[in-house]
Image (cartoon, rainbow, N blue to C red):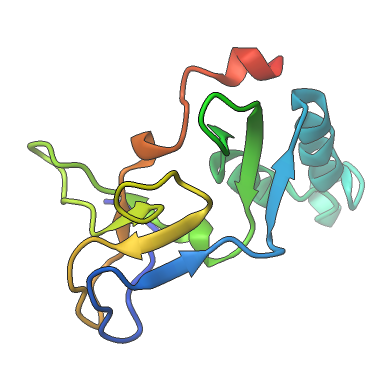
Length: 146
């Protein structure tokens, strides 16, 4: 079970812009800044769980909703954190055991610039899926000092 997900609220045509990062997508240039951000979320209300003064759920979600990405070919690496609907996009792959992705980061043949386009016609109610490997550099966390 995937848990949370993002479903189309209307029919979406192939090639149509589905989602674009907004001011709710945070871009970190350094790993230590991202780490401080997570700690600040966690410690925002203090550290007494019995009084509900720890926001561990939001800090954990933010950790999961973050990835390392180069925003231009051969460019510097950044940590990206989606704090909006984009964080709910689950992964799809063209592999056995996976549902196929129906959106891609960037237009076909172009770089991913934090904008996601429909690869196929998507019907209202269908889950929106992308292949994280198109943009998320899973082995690049050490390069960010993490």
